[in-house]
Length: 151
Image (cartoon, rainbow, N blue to C red):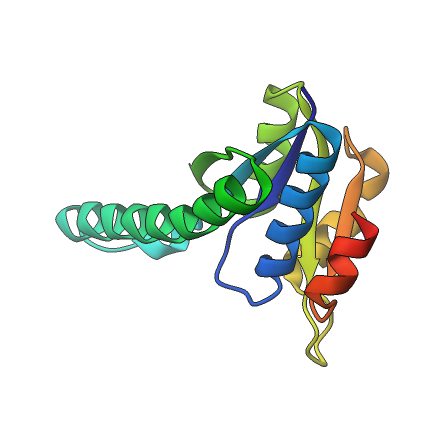
């Protein structure tokens, strides 16, 4: 089964990437893997405090994931899997793709502010020629109706 890998973060454009991945998976008989990466700089504190912060970050990610997972299950019939990694986002994304041969497409949402599509989209497009799978960039301002029409 081909899986769509989508990155879960706190950006607004993440919603469209999730929608696109779920709808494409539903229409093609695929699956969805949702990756959330906790950056290492979040834990540059004392050991005891860093463990508490790490657990709080994981709890936030799991709660955020469950909102998307419920929508995917109820509306699209897709049962996503959650992957939580700690490290540099680009490195972790590439490692997940390389370690799971079922991942067929990386889906990212593009930001809409004046500074550009976002750091992750910028970094991944720079290395897109070397990716082991296609990269789909979903516009952050694309309407739900338009997403439904193209998936």
